[in-house]
Length: 275
Image 1 (cartoon, rainbow, N blue to C red):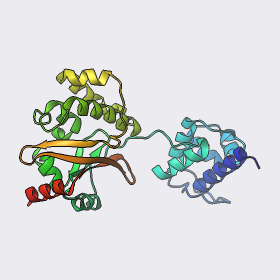
Image 2 (spheres, one colour; image 1 turned 30 degrees about the vertical axis):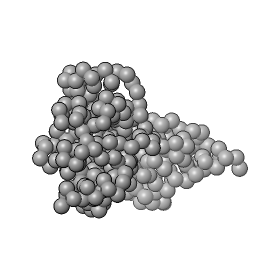
Image 3 (cartoon, rainbow, N blue to C red; image 1 turned 135 degrees about the horizontal axis):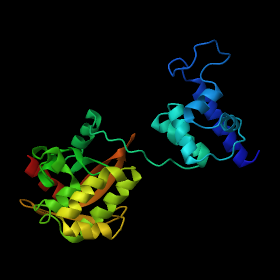
Image 4 (tube, rainbow, N blue to C red; image 1 turned 180 degrees about the horizontal axis):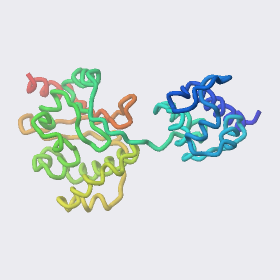
């Protein structure tokens, strides 16, 4: 069996399995006696607004590669979870689907416990549009007292360009700001949040000529690499950090950002200030 045919058979088997798990009555179909559980093929096609013949071919492993639009329709028709939708795209197209951004400004107690355990490393949870949702004590001491700010003002991009206190703490504000703009673009695109960031971008373009210029440069940045980030604290002076950003398991809209003190001496200085 060729590799293409094997993949098509796996896709058909997965569609068939998901179809048989659905309740016809709950989805508005006739409660009449059925020979097999779940929806009929024609009913799935109806829900997905595609040809019944085409859907039957897909289940039988002879429909060829479906488009992303067809897979999206089938995902909705079969009530797939995000993980199941990703699996469907991997079977059908060999790649993950474009992210669907879902705004959810909540953080579980488990994530907060992780942040707290990272002290004295400043750490925070940010959304795909860079709103800060949670932070630890070290972040409050070293970066900003997020708890004292209105939620709208906890946006890292807004703070970088509109908060006058953001410039003095950066070793090279312009270089950091350019990186921030490029990384922000990439995060928003990955999360499918392009429409969500438009109001923020429009606001910053109007209020900050520097942001407007950097945004039009169309640069995107991935990571800091091996660079050390320096922060000038008003009490502790200059400290060095290794910067890392991690995806939050099960939440494509969230990232955990950690500033790990580069030396034991810097870590001890933060502990002393926290105490």
